Amino acid sequence: MFVKAKNLNLDTPKTKGFWLSVFSRLARNKLAMTSGCIIVVLTLLCIIVPMFSSVAYDKTDWGQIMQSPSAAHWFGTDSLGRDLFVRCFIGGRITFEIAFAAAFVVLLVGIFYGAIAGYVGGKLDTIMMRIVDVLYGIPFLFFCILLITLFGNSMALSFVAIAAISWLDMSRIVRGQTLSIKHKEFVEAAMISGVSNFKIITRHVIPNLLGIVIVYAALTVPNMIVMSAVLSFFGLGVTEPMTSWGLLISDGAQNMQAWWLLLSPATLMVITLLSFAFLANGLRDALDPR
Amino acid sequence: MLKFAVKRILVSIPTLLAIISLVFFLVHITPGNPFDGERALSPEALKSLMAQYRLDLPIWQQYLLYLNDLIHGSFGISMKYLGQPINSLLFPDNMGGFWVTLRLSIYTMIIAVPFGIILGAYAGLHKNSWFDKLVVSSNIFFTAVPTMVTGPLFVLILAVTLQLFPAGGWGDGDFAHLFLPVLVLVLAYSPTIAFVTRGSIIDVLNSNYIRTARAKGLPTKKILFKHAIKPAILPVISLLGPMFAGILVGAVVTEQIFTLPGLGVLTTNAATNRDYNMIMAITILGSILTIVFNIIVDLLYMLLDPKIKQ
Figure (cartoon, rainbow over the protein chains, first blue to last red):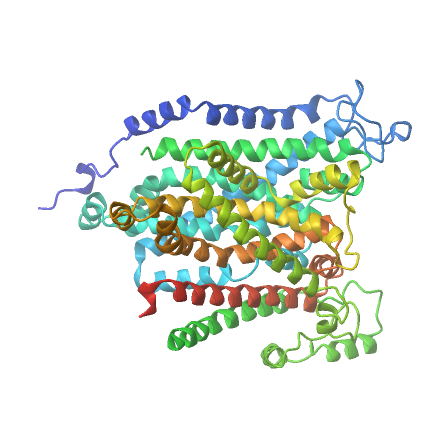
């Protein structure tokens, strides 16, 4: 008689101890924790400031053109008399939205592509990785601009275009990790017990990729922020009167006499990017103690 | 050696062909054509335009003709500047287009590579000194913060406030005009080179054969220059292949910051005017450069690595 599958405990063992120790290691890393807090605070500010501000981000005031920072306008005003403080945070909101959405797509595509290629192996793996190699040969910026030119310029499309060219690294990393997980005993045991491939990938392989995925996610979000900002320099992506950090910086770069136009969004962006870098470093150390 | 080189070049041809096909079919299968947006054209004028750009032919014929053009070194005709060959826009006789981007990238490589290697080697030799910490933290900073933020900040400080350099423009390619763009690019890429060199120097110095050389009583200078440098440089060389693609794109972004008349302007114009042929040409040109540079790096690696040489 066969033992019914439901009587076997095929679940992955609960690794609570591992995640707890990861968290306690991360909590001891002051730089990473501060960075994490900064990211949370900035994200909240980007949500709250435009909601509760007394002036709208696109409210023009011809009497207040190019004012330097003051009590009324903390970050000054731009060439149309709009309040830069509100614009910086609504721009941050858009930037975060694009970055998180693109990073989510990148992780999803990269994980499944890499896990399938690594797990199935053989010819499929060769073909899938050859495709990645070919895409690597195209300078990403030009390809991204090509996609936006073809499918039209909108915020939604620009994040799809960014995501479409950024999943390559993720898929390579996941593939390598999958190859090593594949030969672990518990996966072989699951294979022998007749668990379907799809289920092994989703139940056993992907949960074990979580560590590397978390670290890479913390690196992908700032990359997406930079990509969307670079597109703004080419007049693509977000368009006026809506704004993003990239657009604000590119505006500021054209009006150097008004230094606050450049310094305010640039400072916010530098703080954000560095925070993500330190957080990713801390996560890597916490997940892989050596 | 020659066999390896030939093989390496032959292997990259299918990759290039795949890229060209991907770009071509992506552009031509997408509905709509670049003349949709033009002011209402008479049917005859539209027809002659379509014929001029071969858009009336079946797609496989267009594809083969495009490949034929590429083999003969032509990127076709611009769809914005009607009738003007793309080659004359990309490779103008005076300084502009591709030449600007290429010069920026080459200057960056020539300065950033030795600069990064020297800094990294020094940091690796003096591990945990203040200089080492500076190299490590500047790597974190400049990998996190891109040229599109550092560039305008440098312009604000050095050009607008201190008036040391012009804020933008090509001038006649003189030192003053090129200093800031090249500085921004060098600062963006040399910390990574330094960081990799530092790591590999530390690894090499801990290896057994260096310990042997030390035990034999060889002077430190001799150990460094005879035994340590070559193997320590190898990881740096394999880094340069992917880095070149980054520098090319970085140069294009830097052109936008400093308003230099390079590929950046052509890309922006092509994107806003939906000049499909132009943007295809730029994408393919970028891919060719990346692939060629990767071949050069691989060959260089082979020359230096005794394991592959045999």
